[in-house]
Length: 237
Ligand code: SF4
Image (cartoon, rainbow, N blue to C red):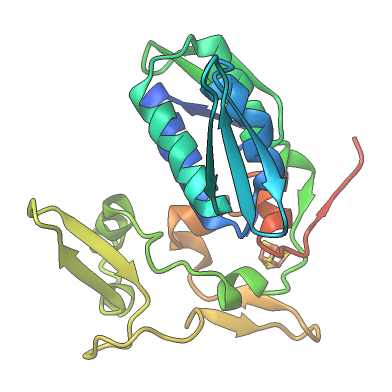
């Protein structure tokens, strides 16, 4: 439940995937989309709100065009442009800073020798309150990776592996879904590894040392914490 990273490096491809997830995972982000629209579209489009749900996308020019759509479609529209166009890394860093609401900068990853975007998560100041909200209420079924599964194979954690559903995509790639009741294709309604702590209203993780990487890193940023109902606190510097 505590994040070990204060800084995350993302390649341009990983940035796009992180933005795609961000655009999809929260209810409504109209203010963010409004701010990003001119940046992503090279000032060709701006967006305004009409009533509670309709966004109005205006394409500027001599024959300006108007399209109405909801917040989610606007997110898809902007993401499609973002994924098809090539932007200078400085622009990508600016977009990331707005999307993830934190400091970002273009830089080198010494381990891979590649250039990408560093995102300051500010999670060193985060203090988990062990309320268990993330384990009980968030949709984590897709947050298990092949590396997680391999780790459990190496340490022969059959008790964990039997709770993983392996499905194969059309291309034959294995995907890992958690947590299912052993011998069934039913998912547990909440994380089965959650253990009530002696302190009232607090919980611990029953597989703390080997839990999925995603759980170790949750929440990824302060925005992620706020948007997903995390009760943890951020201590002043
Ligand atoms: S929701 Fe936040 S505070 Fe609560 S257990 Fe998860 S990480 Fe900790």
